Amino acid sequence: MKKSIKLTLIGSFAALSLFAGESGAELFKEKCAVCHMQTKPTPEQKRNMVAPPIMGVMFHVKEKYGDDKKKAIEFIKDYVMNPSEDKALCLPRSIKRFGLMPSQKGSVTQEELEKIAEYMYDNFPPKGFKHPKMK
Ligand code: HEC
Image 1: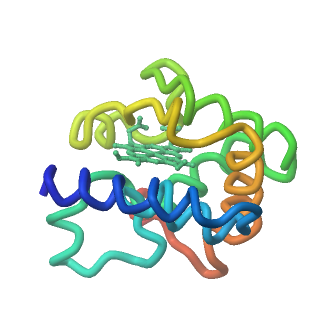
Image 2: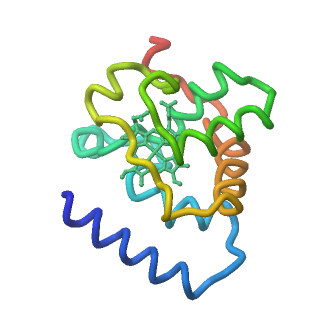
């Protein structure tokens, strides 16, 4: 598993140097989707996940920041570069299971992150999403 993540990361660096000016969706796919699924995981995928799916992440971000898109984006931009347990909005059990997110410093620029965060805010969680916590 670890090895395949590394290979995918190297692949995305190579792709990156070829394309400038990508959309938030494309950037997310390259830089974040290697760990964060964009669809609801099947039970099989759930067992193999290395990070919470992005719909769950954004559920928590919006739980805290709601309609304040600017603050939500600031939070995402900061967390991706400087993750820490005391900033984390996701459930403590997520960090227990997956470990703290590794800082993405050096693999994503501020401009790219701005686009990625905006894409995340505008598209997740999808309509009708129910967090497992809400059961
Ligand atoms: C190597 C795997 C990995 C990559 C790549 C990755 N993440 Fe994460 N991310 C995690 C893990 C694991 C967590 C859950 C633990 C935590 O919150 O720190 C997480 C949590 C998060 C959170 C929630 C923080 C909270 O409040 O708890 C956000 C927001 C986030 N990631 C955004 C991103 C974005 C944006 C990218 C792409 C630029 C990205 N991540 C790339 C592994 C990754």
